[in-house]
Every structure is written in structure tokens, then in C-alpha cells.
Length: 67
Image (cartoon, rainbow, N blue to C red; front, side, top):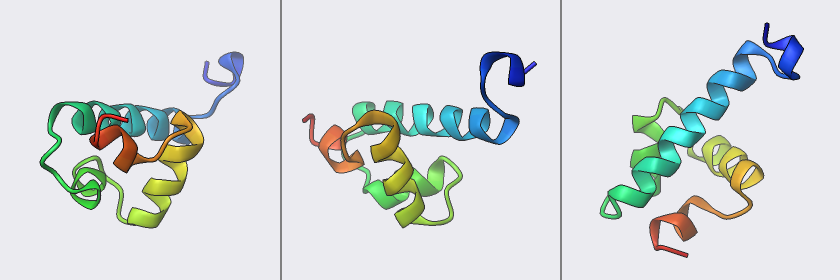
């Protein structure tokens, strides 16, 4: 099923976690980026930052600050 739409299960899960993080960053601007990453299941803030930027084209900090 996932291959039919050009993705895999791990990539789908990563996309869902990144979408959740994006939502948290836009609604709770008080949280630190590392806290949002941990809340969304990322154990590495560096990995979170890199994959977030790859997916959305902006940093998590920019989203958090409304940029």
C-alpha cells in the first residue's frame, strides 16, 4: 500500500511526527524546539532539526517564532 504512493512505513511515520511537531510549534510558542522534538518522539534534536528543515524548508525555530 505505501509503495503504491511512493513511500514506506518509516517515511510515513516520520512525516506524521514532523507534521505533529509543526503543529505544536505553531500553537505553543513557549516550548523549546528540543522539547517539541522530544514530545513528538525524536531522541536526537539534531536529527529532528535536519529532517524538519528538509520537509518544510524552514527551521523549527523559524516556525516557532512565526517566521
